[in-house]
Image (cartoon, rainbow over all chains, first blue to last red):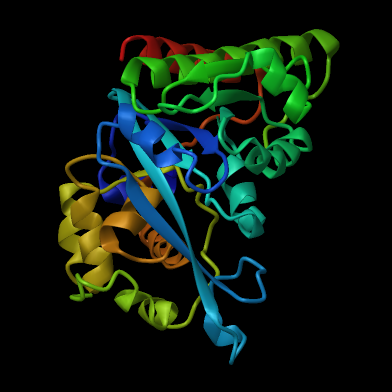
Length: 206
Length: 120
């Protein structure tokens, strides 16, 4: 909290903590559907503007002549208590917006990589991304109607998902199923934190 | 900003509202929430249309930077500059994002989030 300015703003007695979970995955995999299944607000869209140079600087005036691209991220909110809010952020679908993923995962509790079993290969890029980041994540297989059913272990092998990464089935349209995914993310984050503590590894997020 | 039919209409020259400034005075995480007091809303009346609207939005309930950008239909970077100014000027109170360090602090938060999810 910014105490210096809060005095003038009229002190709000209680510090409000906000946490976020990142929902990653390829384009059209059901990220916004998943967010909408548990969010208390209709998923909102926030936009970042970047130049075609792709540096993540959303100021076109600095690079005259460069075209701008808008990167959209959908997100939802769960107010858990007066002083605790959880946000769910969907990543931009296109993989060329990695810089935006970096911003999204910074400080996150954890992530779920959503996989469409009809287009498994779309999951390679998101999974590669998380493999090289220090953020607990799990893989959630979104089981669309009529989608081919695989055994989770078949998917794990096909996507070369490491044994320590949890893999769960879900239906992104259903609240209880999404709840289970989010519970899974947090439990995995706790287990990871405990393991790091046990190893004495300095644990940082993002 | 009255161009409701073209979501990109207000993204033309996005930094006009910040008078060209692109660097926020402080970094604000996308999920950090902000609150405006009633007094701050009154003060913001004289701070320009965008800042006033942001203050009004954050008065009844805490809103994240992401929500402020979405509801104001401002690009995230623009909203961050304005919000950082408002925090510096005492018009918004910045609350904390999740702790990044400290086993106990992080574990406490995870436990609270877990219990919140189970109650959904």
